[in-house]
Image (cartoon, rainbow, N blue to C red; front, side):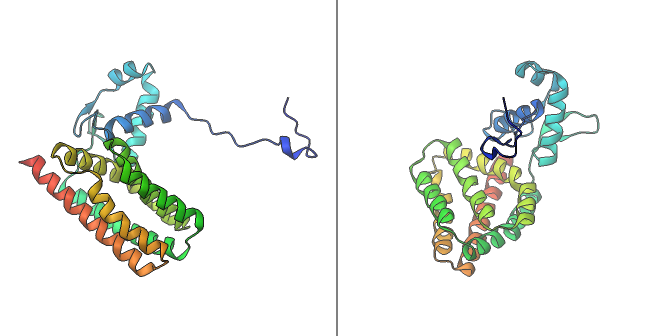
Length: 233
């Protein structure tokens, strides 16, 4: 039995994280889209998805509304849902927004560097150097940027990052699959960008960290423009 006696703090209540059914559905659908299991532009049938996941249509609808908020899916005027397709203008907007947010985060991370942050970033890059599975490569790539955002210690910046993170993750995973299909080493682009950023942050050089992040995002944008042109060919 849980004691509510203030004299026994070691048995005090702890916060409980309750995942709703809609959150679980959203997580599964998001992962299926990021992995390419559900292709870009594909229609998503609520009844079919509900049957596949053995749930009612209510949590499915709630999950799709959440994913629409993240910019991963969209509804037409009839309420039908499909995986979002990103135009060249979408990519430009994401690139410029990432530059605004992430250059700032890299500068702040360099200024506020802690031993824990340094260790986490180094472990991430070392893991990426060894990884061969394309899904795990995408996960580690996004995690590197998440670590820097968290290290910036700026709560409102982190909130803004969350508005674009899901779209960045979707485009990143798509680019990684494209690289794999064209026999291009998938980790090369990430490591070429991440290593200079890491070096600058470890040196506590905010200017170089910001410059390295800006260049990395520009290179990422160029890759996505090329991917878009190839997709239209």
